Length: 358
Image 1 (cartoon, rainbow, N blue to C red):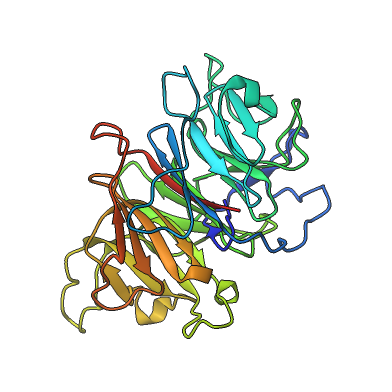
Image 2 (image 1 turned 180 degrees about the horizontal axis):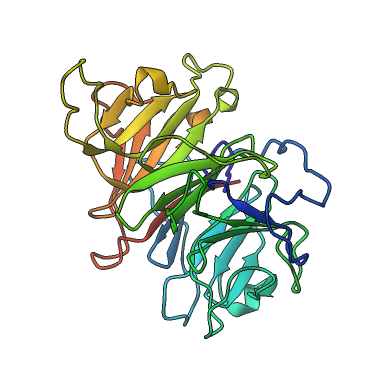
């Protein structure tokens, strides 16, 4: 999911097995289709999409104290469960059930069946399916080249659907995550995925011992996986090139919900107890100096997305779904510059996502 100036975070694998869909081979298979170049610049963001447990809110940017959604839509009328949702760099929206992907072209005015531009049935050629014919899509993300990626907890499988989309598609790349002997071995409970501006794929994953890590694999996804060494959920990236020329501090940043120590222990001293805070790291990371955030906010967010041209970060509180806006980069003792209450009701201000769109 890369939106406007946001590079969506994400994924990684550990010695992941790459499979070109349809060929049936396994191992570090080369990508047979022509490699894609760097992503094109995306249009500036004019909309902020807020997803609360299957309800879709569209806010006009810039936000202000009395901002109200321009549209409030049910993402999959009548489905009975919360669908996976992703927004592409040009504003198209993919909404997915366990059996089907529905593509809606921008501008988004309705998610009723009559407005579906393309319906793609989920098949074994696209992603793992169980005996009941269902996938378990924990996340879906667009990459900077407008391709759609599926994160399936059946088989801990990540697959790419490459544009142009069609009704009878096959995955162009399949990544088996958490393979034995890899850096991600055992981390088979997939979470959110994201891409940075270079189309490096990151994934947040957890193992059976409830240890969680952010992993990465670089485009063209045929290289050995890596790990950031961080327990960092809701990760998002800011590239200095995404700021406006007038920015006074165009820093490369990694943002997310961090679990870990806030300081490097002195020699011979035990590490400080871990905390759970929204944090900011300067890039590139420097593991030899300790992976410690340079700034943090004592809050727990369920979603986060950065808007570098406006020098802002949008977050959704995990507790009540409140939409908070912070300055970018985060400064010491950062406080929200704007707060908007969740409109979905106490029982639905959860299962959160944020997207920027043209």
